Image (cartoon, rainbow, N blue to C red):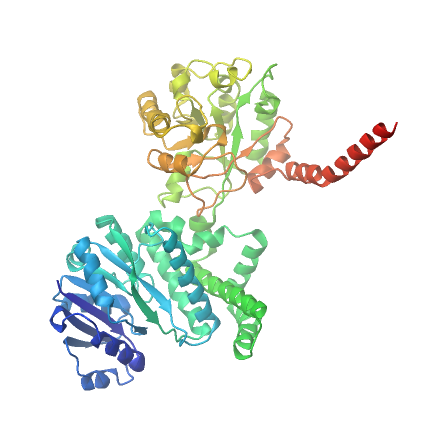
Length: 589
């Protein structure tokens, strides 16, 4: 098997020469390799330097006008004659066994993408940007050292030190030149992953990168990353949730306000962040100052990317509609009269429920369904600026009598999670623990309300705590629930709620195969970057006024409940001291 090495270069004559000389020292026969250098508009004498080199293997040079790395790499692999194509950047140095390791990996698994390791050379430019990159590469390497399985989508890249079957490149069409200066490697990786699904990490394929960019150059690069991240989201809407832009939208309130301020006024970012970063780089600084500098540089890069993305989308309104929507999910159980033998916090009276929904509607909130939310996450539709989701666990019959009519009167969408093995029956899982008996929704009631203001999701077959079940039973509880829901409603269910809020990694993995969304009982807001199978909910209590429910919709929790918990924790030592003194007094008496 032969291998073609493709190097796209722009104005890095000295670095390119160092890379090529390391390739000339490879330990495979020269006949099994070829080198293709694409000069992408260089003006530093690169072509003259290449003319002076004497390569032991076939080396072809193609000079073109500056068209970007994607176009240059396409021109290179299309000239390749070998079955395997290895892409390298021009600032690398290769050990003698690099090509033989890549070839060996392709010999084991044909038509795959082999991802090698990148070590940041100590010879690189000593900047904070270099330090950030080195730490990122080290974190990635440590993660794969623990588990070498590459993950979608964070590892779906065809970047430097990645080799690909030429046949696969022909099938997917290579790089997309629309990604002129950034993310062309991720775009190709997503398409290759969908085509083959075989990305292999090879830790023995190691290259040394001599990073030469100044920190301000790394900040400028973020302009292209911001533009291309928007382009990537438009091309692959399902990838939006995995972008840095989505993570930025989920930052804390103060950090996000500051980030937006610097994004709107880039001169202030250069003054407030750029000046101290430059000072830290120029003087011998302690590690604490270096750590502060890294955080400042990362923040400056984020603000620059955000600004570029907002400009690419035409303004903050369009950006927020795509990336910044947040969703609170309200969790109910019973609506109606409280009954003896039932946990009191599970029942909200009919009058209180109506006041709560009315308060949300007066403040402009719109009730949505899981399907609405999923459609927004996939980039298929818009989400109201003030969206809230009302959910009911277990599917008690009282909600059809008291809750559904209220939701219909306000036009609020909602979701009910059904225990499919008990439809029309009773809450047997709670009865076994001494709870009062409650009737559950019947098939007729489900059919009557489906498609009006109610969407129905799964809540397992028997309401068992899923982490404690064996694998076969787990599949029956989750996949079986999905099949039951399809037979019951005639639709493929979108959402699932974990019984008792209990889950572990095994349960979540099983739910991912059956449902598009899954809800926990953990409090907080949900953002585009939130794991769709670990969505948060806040439980509405009988004592909650309309104002408290509005706060839950705004914050994802009740501040009053948080204060009560803090007070309980803060007074615990005092209570223990009083108890100890009282015991001592009684003993003395």
